[in-house]
Length: 112
Image (cartoon, rainbow, N blue to C red; front, side):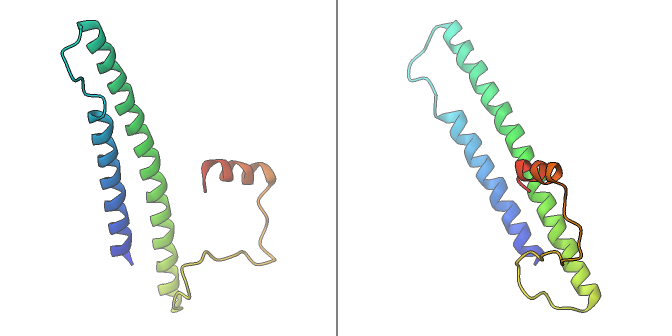
């Protein structure tokens, strides 16, 4: 099961690197330009790279959290002796407490 997550993580890293390569090469100048225009383009590219780095960090943190939850769930199932039935998330029982509306909205907005 960990191998699957490692493969998914590798693919995510590969996709991020491909995106960065695309961002860095898509606007290469065809002919020499004036210094100010080149400086503007360089600043634009630097902003795009910073933006991509922030986006990748966010995506990586979300992926890491999901993998950690799945690993914990697998460990609990192994410790309990139960075999995992499926990859579907478990639903809370009717006795479980329901999250308050503001907390639920924040979770939905964050993507969890």
